[in-house]
Length: 126
Image (cartoon, rainbow, N blue to C red; front, side, top):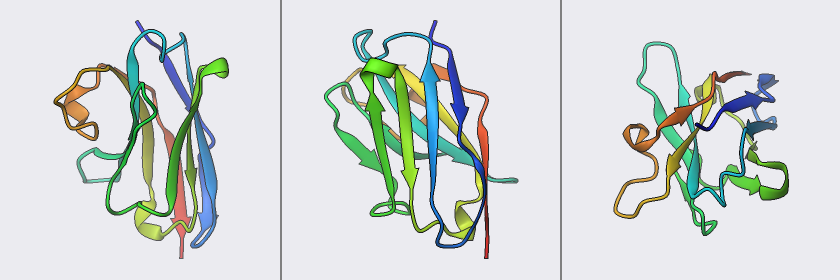
């Protein structure tokens, strides 16, 4: 079972940047896991933000394209989310997630992910 722990959240002003990290308990890439970042704002459903496949193919939600970058350091078993030009609407709890890499699924669908971290809060003020 993969265990995930996020860090790096905080409070920033609009236009600022943050980098989130997600430490995994095992070498997710060699174990055949694909990874993703999700977020959930109060009163809203959890939505996919960015995902990365075993072959390093990335997928982004339209709302973050050009501002967020997902990456992974396989040597450190760590997933990252670099967030630039943050906006108040980016305020949410951010979660990392892992799923077996299978084809034919939408990588930003929360339903295909098996393992989740506890989340880290990001707050963007205007």
